Length: 428
Image (cartoon, rainbow, N blue to C red; front, side, top):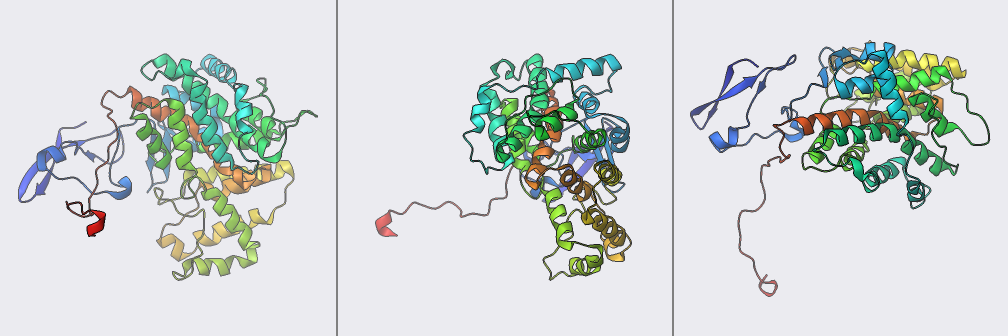
């Protein structure tokens, strides 16, 4: 951090505030003493210009299309790493040695079981309950079963609860799916990989042996890696805000799941897939592109553009390649994928989309892949939550360990009535 100052003029009086330097990215004006010095707040709906915390986990440069986890480019991790290795990286700060990775994977595999009473908990939901509604309830209920890891002041408790959340989320998500279709729950098989185990619990049945398709296993592992963390997005900020009060980690992650459920956050890949299905065939693309350009037409190209990225989403490049691999492995022929390819090409070469920097994002392809594997659209956001759990847990741990962390308390611009006296009902 350099010894820089930024001057702010308020009511004709100048005030100096420190300018902080990160390891990369823009400098930050430290306004923590703004109110005490000036009696004024800043007004920043959505916190688009406000850094709410200091973090060493994830870095995004939207203009350049860069996403780094602990300094490593997301493309390299998705192509060369595994989700378990990325989980270790996010929690510990460095890539593991082989023995460290083996020990970590073994530890996670020993936490995959759910308390048997939680199986009964599922029966309290309606059969048509959304998987995200079930996951909110079940994850929050974990704090009622695992009292031995809820002391947030104890680093060992935080470590155990982090491992439990990462390990149990696939089991919770798979059970939500099984419950919705009336099939028996599948217990974890710890001889399989993290991702292979999830696929078996989701699509396997007790009556026959389930064979994990390597290309599908690799595709799901990539999807998990690509969704592991994404800086201070809405759900991550929710986890941090809940955690700032001292809430237990299971409650904090349940809060993150609730936030992710919103269609503006976790439901984008489902919207993109529905749009591609609506378009139907490549010959209909020009018509829909013209509709997207028409400001008076409510139709929008879903899966294009991003609040942060103003360049090609680095995660979308990996997804495009992965779609091909999955379709070839499963011998799938789907006009939706060909429509997606041609829509991407036409949009990227259209001056309108170039000018507005509307590039495909990760959601554009992930829904196509998940559908080909066999997941219903209701499970898409649940899979997002499964993958993002490691990011939430890492962010929560970082926040709890930060000695400068205080309870979140945003300010407001009040526009309601000024003080007035109460009038009895018979005099109104």
